Amino acid sequence: MKKILALSLAVLMTLALITGCSKPAASKSSDGPIVFRYGLNSSWMDSKNPYVSTRAISSRTYHHNHYEGLMRLDPKLEHAPRLAESWTVSPDGRTWTFNLRHGVKWHDGQDFNADDVVFSYKSVLENQLYRYFAEVRDITDVTKVNDYTVNIVTRVPRADYINMFIMEIVPEHIWSVNKTKADFDSYFDPKMIGTGPWMFVEESVDEFVRYRANVNYWGGRPNVDEFIYIFFANDDTKLQALEAGSIDMTGLLASQVDYAKRLPGISLVEAGGLRLTEMGFNMWKDPRSRGNPLIRDEKRIRQAIDHAINYEELIAFAKGGLANMEYGLIPSLAKPFAWTPDSNTKREFSPQKAIALLEAAGFRNVDANGIRSNAAGQKLDFRVSCIESSYRDAALLIQRYCRDIGINMEITYVDTNRQGDIIENQDFDTDIYYWGWTGDYEDPGFILSVMTSEQIGGRSDCWYSNPEYDRLFSAQSSIMDLNERIAAVHRMQEIIYEDAPYLILYTDKTVTAYNSDKWTNLVRMPDQFGDPLNQFSYKSVTRK
Image 1 (tube, one colour):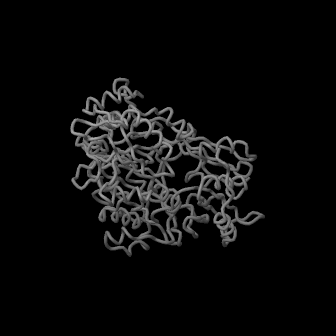
Image 2 (cartoon, rainbow, N blue to C red):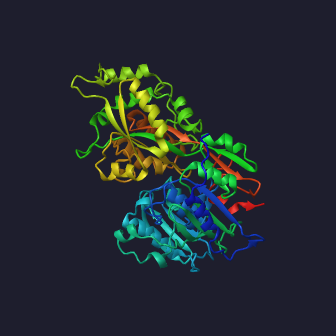
Image 3 (cartoon, rainbow, N blue to C red):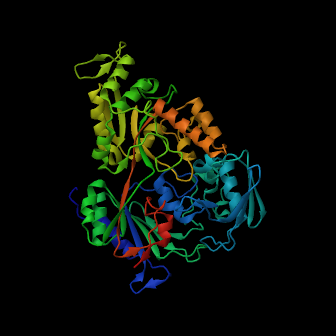
């Protein structure tokens, strides 16, 4: 592994600051509050507003700790109650009646009731708030029956109903200051008053976020008094902090695993993941697009690149073996909707087939630098935008693979914010880019939605459009027969594989290291193969 760097002065100051924070009035050990610290190296969260944030880190570090939905998945991937203790659905599958929990308190001591549920859903629907609107848009009515009963009516039956009912509920008595869409879009509650097991205390940007246990949580208070996320500038200082005991748990790079295995008192947990990495192409057909139309209009070029990539070598080199090869939008762990091409359609590693595709597309001329062009003089010379901290190794290897078949890729390294600007604010000023998505165990609807035409300028990052795909997406959420819905979802992924607006490079495996001499009762989500850091572990982790 890389030589471990000494802790930076900034990190040491952060740890000192956290150690000196005011102590919560929760149960204490002889040493003071029981504090669990998780270290991460990530960009800072984008918003405290759970309805407009776009980054997975925001959901994990902010929203999932504070806000709750009506239901959720449990570690066995079964639908379980949350703010609703039970529910029924009408025979036509359109009217849902939720019986809400009694005695639930917001973090400021106010009572939770049906008014909060009605307000939250109507706010998202009426203002088309970004994060959840696509999931709830089929809701036609939300009605308070009494203080602890709500009826929700949908336009059609929804097979993906959990996507509607995991939406986070916010307190009306705080959020009702918002009157317009612009108000909601720009609003955040600095205290993040929710009903969840953790209460926000303080934060310092790029350093830490600190929570204390909600002692009045309806599901029972967490087993620790405080939970702190500590941010690090790089992965080496993060691992050294674990070794020194300054943090209790962190994720590892593949290059760090062997070193971490030798640390006394530290245990490692390897887990499958839902986070996919894609090589994306600029598919925007608008005249304003600043991408090279060759990469958009000729799918044989995109398919040739796929044939040129040695995925086994890519995973070994760029990920240290900690990844799974994937073909569809839905990761293989998210069964039964995951899809794999059959032997007749699968594009195996074959530079020869890649070259044959390029020549069939008219790119037969090869210049002195080995770059192909067609009879019109158009060269296979493309600009690539790469988030350096996440995808540099993969981009360099794919650049070499493409060079071998006559395609030049000029890589520009950027950070995450710059990547978003290039696509969203600068008329998609690149030809190819690297990015990623994290799918869901709940339902495939979210990850499928990113390829729909209506998400161009929204969730979509490649701005792809296909009428058949759009039609299937609109239909699949209302197909109540599971086998029929699986068939539709598989066909959608087949379309994406054929059109290749993305090449799915891999899904990450994760390795989490924690101080097992000090901590126990971690829960994996899903059980058997999931990550040990999740909303269930936050609550169950116990000091020995």
